[in-house]
Amino acid sequence: MPTITTDTLQSFNVLSARLKVDMSDVIYLLEPNAAPLTVLLNRLNKNEATNPRYEWLEDTLMPNWSNITNNAGTGTTITLGPTAGSTAHWNYVVPYTLIRVPSTGEVMLVTSVNSANGQITVVRGYGTSSSSIDGSTTPVPVVILGPAYPEGVLGSQVSTPTTLQENQYNYIQVFTKQVKVSRIADKTATYGGKIRVTEQQKKGIEILRDIENAFLFGVRYLDTTRNIRTTGGALFFISSNVTANVGTLTYAAVEAFLRNCFRYGRTRKFLFCSPLVMSAFSMLAESRGHIHLVPRDVAYGLSIKQWNAPHGEVMLITDVNLTGTVYGGMGILLEIEECAFRYMQDVTLETNVQNPSDQLYIDQYVAYVGFELHNEQKHGVISGVTGV
Image (tube, rainbow, N blue to C red):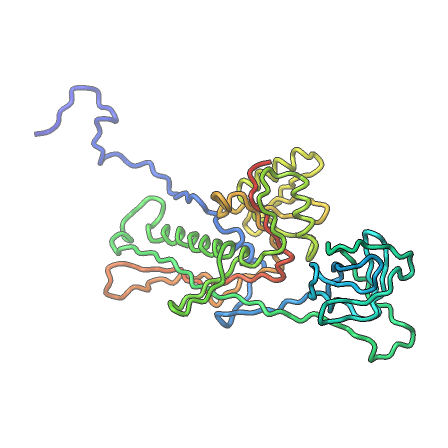
């Protein structure tokens, strides 16, 4: 029995199966820019690894600052070290070294060094009026000026301590994402492209996001029980220039943070910001007037802005992976030239890895990659930002 209508035929009366679906041919992904650090390293600093544990050497110059303690007024026996009673810094100086106390202007000449107790013997007020340092155990900063050897000094009298290289390492981590589509689904006509292709695109972004999270938050670990290696990320390596619990971001706080981070390395660094931190920098730049966020052309496929600080250029990039209660108030400053994307196998799409008898297709992304960071003192972390 047919369905009969005596009313005007309307779209509401048309059989639903007869209506053509007005569907866009584009599938809009929620997070297409989910891995800015990974993308940047992949294009700027990418090196092959030949072993799942890869290593590098780091070195530094001899320190030229220390502290003096246990100084009895104008006494000539002084403890050299970061804290009272410390013996850690005795090898910073050799006989004939000059040291200066910035707080008083006094210069001292080192005549001997006792490695057992960290004490040095000095001539007080060398070339200047002797300035008394209080006899407390509170450390007093001193700058090491270097040696002043006498004319005709014997080679046996010259001592030249030097720093030794330190070995650093990290691990290659195995990443993979699979696409599973039945053979019938692959042959089904769909809007937005073939199901198999759109799933490949989606999983490609997801594996990059996984790598990004490892490069930011990962820990270096060798699990011999389960045969797993994990790669250490930026937060694993950076320990020196960490500014925490910032709260409201002020210009003074930014300057203090950047001043420490630009003490070593190049005058251009990249700050990977949470959306909140990016907003704070933007509002701070606008309120200061003479500080400008300069829009950059889209570079390396990323949108980059520039903060012109007195210490150098800070390239600002929003990283949506920095989110949540802790990471949502964080910015990670990296000298990209001192970081690397290490790979034994770069992100690769392998197709048709299913068994021949399976009635489905299995494609998979596979990556054997790891993160590398040199001289952690060249980088920094600012966290706990709540606003501006």
